[in-house]
Image (cartoon, rainbow, N blue to C red; front, side):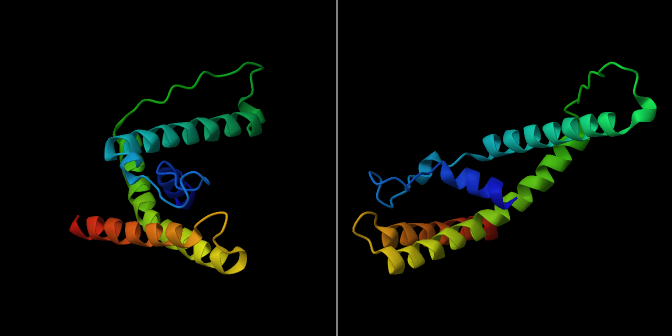
Length: 137
């Protein structure tokens, strides 16, 4: 869930020298896009689990490959929604993590080549924005 939160947050950018610590959070994926991502993730996970069991379960091996079709049923959607709930909580953690990392980088490397303090400030600000949205739910 942390890596997915990080993936969504990275849509905003802000990490290049040109952006110099200023993400554009209008690029953050909306709820629909996040849900679609989680649905596809759950479906792929189920496919991979099925393939793994096909490989390891020699008793059922018939020399061919089974074609697996995963229906987008209520179970998949429920699992995806549960996953997205965890991801959304980690979005907050992710902002704090990278904000603290940027403060450390500013102390270690300075801000001549990249404005780590601006990046940290933006990440902390977005933490409070997302926290407020999350508390309203």
